[in-house]
Length: 284
Length: 260
Image: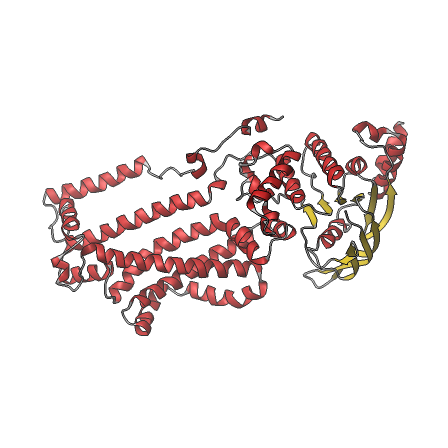
């Protein structure tokens, strides 16, 4: 029996190794850089080198988030009831709904186009054209078509997400070894099963990279779309605060959204790490 | 068990330039129940194409291929194929890979796991059932692929140069695994290889293909179990000389004769 076999014998995966949680990507130098920026910010504001109107102190930002998070009479004045939490929840839900729809549509179309050349010939020009148009310039059209409702923002995000995920899924489908679908066919797998068990699971690592990119872009795009017109959301809060020249609350809102976006990215990273844990095992 | 019959099989491909290429030309072949047939020939002679047609992965241009009298109309779990390249899904654990064909057929979980474990035991891999394929060596992956095919209880076993990339010792171990399973389940085997020694160790019959046609059909009546020493028997040497000449290695055969 070879050494490799002996090593594998009797191996029972522990809960941790079964889940294989990836280590959080906390780079000590990155943390140091962040601390330097915050330290410099604190020093500038404490020494009075910048007016609080242009650069409010870090403590003030934390205070604004704390005082306006769950309820805020201040934001109520701007018809943005429910505090920062409610507005962040609106932005968050739009991003998540759009991402979900984008994943289903973009990945589905991308994988189908990788398998069916006729379908690819028909859909490629549409998707590639959609991908080359700067997405921000289409935002006013959605405002005209759907008004300031949630549909306008989510539609914009869906167009953006679908084009990204289509390209990622198509490329991943093209790169998949054709032996795998043939092997599944030989074992009696029907087309639907091959699409899920082989094309979807086999391309997951590449597709998930696209999901993260789409999600990262969606936060900014959603906020921009809300700035143009929305009933609620972080973009609306920033717009209202800009009108009132309230820099402190503007920065507080942006940082609160950034914290949510980073938390979402870490959750997605852990979830994706679990789904693609087979890639991280030691290779013989 | 299955009887394979090929009548005037012809396969034509169109190149991107528009030219037609005849990969298989008028092949007629009968393979008896449980026969172990090796298909050898130089690279590009059409042996893999013929195997893929029998597998149902390639539609036939002309002619007819039947298995137990039924025409082949596509892939079937009744015909298992061990690929030259790795076909074990890296995103499924070993046990799930072996049970995959049964899962597709809707076999109950307990039953399919039992069958998968039995097949893994037969290829000597019970201890890695929960491992990921990436944790296994090339030889172990081939064993998993063989177990996966046998879990489906195929009547026909098709093997497309399955051990071409493996080292000599691993190859010999795997020959034994295949011969043991063949002895136990008695499928009809069509084994494509370019290795004359491998064909002589395994086959009841060796078919030689050249430029899409069958040019030789030899019965190998060496006693089983065969060992590496069996290849030195006069009958084996005579077969080998002819087979090597078919592969265009006349100079090698002549040189060996001169040395004798």
